[in-house]
Length: 202
Image 1 (cartoon, rainbow, N blue to C red):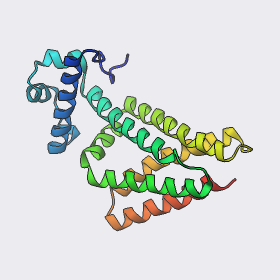
Image 2 (cartoon, rainbow, N blue to C red):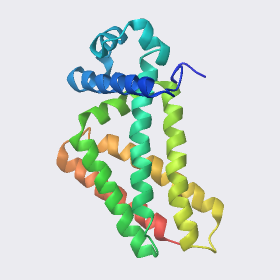
Image 3 (cartoon, helix red, strand yellow):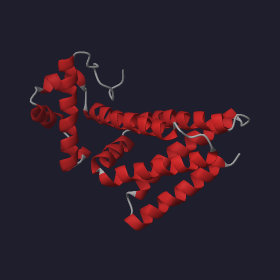
């Protein structure tokens, strides 16, 4: 186990509730002051537990941020899987992919906490490894659907394209929310055009 992971996974109901409370309070602190200002002592105080109890679950702030990011990732994967589940043609894929990107962009725009969590991930080398792993998982979801639509396609090319499309999607979101809204909207539309063209070209 590295220092960015939880020290122990909650197995009992009481432990799960405590972890939920810790992460809920961490989210509130980040919403109020940003992830840079997140302090383990304040988090323990907000949660109503001792600092020692907090460290039983999370060795440091990076582990808290990782847990929050993993929750976001789980929601994202579920959304992608659902969005691609009914795709049976390339036209369907183009429509579903565009809708997924629009949904993700709306979440980034509407929930500053998520943006702050991903900024914290980018600032931590160990957590950036997690981001690549997540791109691979999401890319695999997309690649599986592409392979079903293109049975004669090169599997390695499809895997590489799907991974790149998903990873660049994350980068596009971060860029889009860091500039003025009109420019951000245009960047997202440009990304969708490029990604869909690449995905749907045999």
